[in-house]
Length: 331
Ligand code: 13P
Ligand code: SF4
Image 1 (cartoon, rainbow, N blue to C red):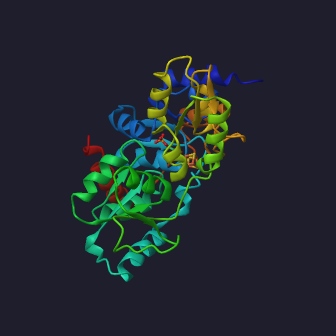
Image 2 (cartoon, rainbow, N blue to C red; image 1 turned 90 degrees about the horizontal axis):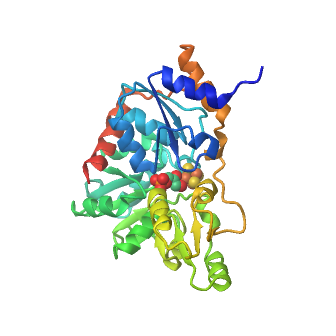
């Protein structure tokens, strides 16, 4: 017998004490089923405030982990254990190597303040928390780096070299990337790990020139995970929520090309909106979750046999939470 996944998901959402959460990059059919949607910061804040004991998180691993860290009493399931490729570029030992890189080049460990982009594993967040550091997202990185600088320390920014450099440029700070040319931590204010998002690397300055030539007067809006050259050449950069707001407030006749994940751009206003790439910029891991997976995750709660549950050890949870709470306290 064919299962009507939509109807079954709706039924279980009514009957179980569960909140379904989805990031903007999820497939439409999954996204439409969610009780909570938002950018990474909004998802973290809203999940913390949510009362239900069960969370089914449609997104990538670090997002579900963040809910578990912030609210350890909750049971958090992922319909698919999908991992953000950028988050996988750094683990605890690469983090330690980055600290050692700075120390070997003359910066004392006490003078380093680590900031990790939320797109990182809980073990990295935990190490950052233990060193007095914080988490940031694409929507609050400016404020978090500004706060970090108040300590008078050097910032070690992991794992996204683009986000770190983009905000350093915006703030008039000196930055360098470990492993890219001469990176002297004594000279730089912000030292970045060499990670990146493969999806956002697809957008190029050539793409921007193509659209500017084709549609003179077009606006270009991109996510700050894009290369600094792309962000510099664009008219606006912001988190997924900030991009939605920016495009939503444009005059309907104003053409705009957007540099972020395909599912989100496709869901923005239909007229006069273009994807800033000649290839479809899909995040493969965000796209792994299907309606059937969501159904199975909810069914597993109903059947009392939860699948794909996020489990973290006490130490990791404690210190990752310290790093996340330091971020959440900054308004
Ligand atoms: P946002 O926090 O802007 O939603 O970004 C998350 C992400 O993974 C972008 O690639
Ligand atoms: Fe990670 Fe990039 Fe996918 Fe965002 S778009 S989840 S940064 S791989």
